[in-house]
Structures are given as structure tokens and as C-alpha cells.
Image (cartoon, rainbow over all chains, first blue to last red; front, side, top):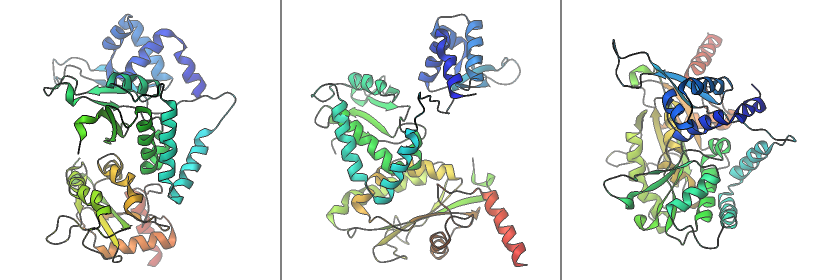
Length: 226
Length: 166
């Protein structure tokens, strides 16, 4: 399916709510849960979830949600996750990705890490709404969400209390180039986020890479005094 | 996934030319990261083996490729396991700061190749693979993350070589 057709499948508001809900969970979502989140019946949700799967926006599988197996465990339920493939439409046609890959390749070969990070930090500072550094994790989450990072809070209900809270990000906005030139592009991303948050405020962006997520996390800088 | 499920393992060598001796204060942040980053490798999914100097915790004291060149030689179950460790663990932070500590290499500084499961490559063998990559470019004998070959492709290549030689 063409990207434009896949994206057009999201024009239906119910479908869009379902897609956004599944994408935001970062795990497999069953039909009942998705229906409840979108405020529609299970039958309608199932119909739209299947359309989204056909459009290549979601991937489906089956799983026993109860965790039981063997006789009596019941029929496996259909579950959905966001498809990994990227979809983009640009009118008129633009190809910033090739430009980004070529620039990254040249920067990597020339060893321009420091210059790239300086530019990224300046850009982050320019993009910040106010002159003051970002004041709280909640404010940081809002800003990160607006930039497509899909932030989520970890450790919010831990026994150690609020001090251990850390914002992780499910999405890397620079995924394709970051996969090809990880140290260069992940370093750029960290510098951009440092600029966005401000380095002299209560929050700190730092590297804490995990498979399948953005390489940076944000937490209270007072927790990280070396 | 266990080692026994893979007939072939992926060997990796990378070399890094130090900008300063390891006991120079400018290298301290790197030296301090060695133990935690190596410990993360030992515990990483798919890790098989890494070269360690006798009586030491790592291989930084071995200088088989030159007095100021440290080497990193390891074996992994799959390329994905090695990639995740290299770029999606605490190791990424070392990579990010590489320009502070290491000279930029004009030639390839990392080489990958398949070995039979259970085989632990020697430093000599590893340096030959790096020389092969530098001389001939990526091939099933010696490749990189960006130009990788599967174990099956490498085995096919070996068979073709053997048949050609016979």
C-alpha cells in the first residue's frame, strides 16, 4: 500500500483514536482494551483494528491474554502493536532523508561530531519556548511529546518515591540515520535535548540506551551528581 | 536463545588509536567506564566471549596492532546481539565520546566475520580479517555492520572458494 493510502486510513476519527492508543502503549493491545480506550463497541473496534492492520499501520498477532495455556485456557485473543515501518507523505515531493544520510555520512567520515553537537545544542536552545530551563519532568514530557519522542514516565510508583522518576522515550525521531551512524546521530540527539531542556536547570538529559527506544533519558539532575 | 542453537558465531575486532596514554588524566573518564561497560558486555544477551589479557580485567594492556592502539576482540551469537550491545547499552556513551579519546581512523577500524560456534579467534586471525577488509573491501570473509553477510552467505562463499581451489 502506498504511504498516502495508509495515512488516509487514519482520516476516520475512531480509527485514528485506536491507532493513537495502540501506538502510545508500546506493547500488545487486545481488542477489548482498545475498544474501551476509544469508547466504541468491541465489534466496531475489531473492524477498524483490522483495517489499520491491512493498511500496514498496525501489526497483529494472537496471544492468550490470561497467561494460561493448554485445555481450558480459551481461544488466543488477537493483539495489535504499531508497525515499525515509517510512513511519510510530502507534497510536493521532498527527500530530506537522503540529504540527512549523505550529510551524516560526510560528517562521520570527517569526524565532525563536536561541530554537529554544538549546532544541535544551539538549535535546542532556540526551540525552547522560554529563556528559562525546563522546570519539571511534566513540562519536559509535554515538550518531548510535541517533538515526537513519545515520552513515558518510569519509576513513578516505585518504593523509592518521586526522586527515582525518569522519563524514557519510545520513539527516536531520527531513527533511520541514527541506525546508520549511532554515535554521531545519538550524540547529536543528546545535544539537541540538552539545549531544549537547558543544562543549568533542575533536569538533566543523559545517555541510557536500550534496545528499541530513544538513547536518551531525562531525570532530575540532583540525582546524578557524580 | 542459547549458544547451541547457532552453528556459527559472529566475531568482532575493533582497534582504536589512543590520543593520550591511558594514565593521562584526559583519558580518566574512558578508563573509569571500562569495567562497567565490560561487565555490561559479559551480561548482554548473546554475548559469548571477549579477549582478556592474562591476569587483567580487559585487553587494553595488549597492544598487538601498535603501541598506542588498543584492541577489542569478542564473539557473539548473532549480529543483532552485538549491535544492541554496541549501540543500545552503556557502550554507546563511550562511542559518543570517541573523538575525545581516540584518533579518527581513515581506514576501517571494525571488522566482523563468522566463526564456527565454539571457536575463539586469535588476535593474529582477527588482524588478518581487518587487513582483508582494508585491502579488499567488505566480503563474506570480513565485513562491517553496514555491509553485513549472513552466516549462510559466508558458508556458501567458503564452499565456492574450496571448490574453486580443488
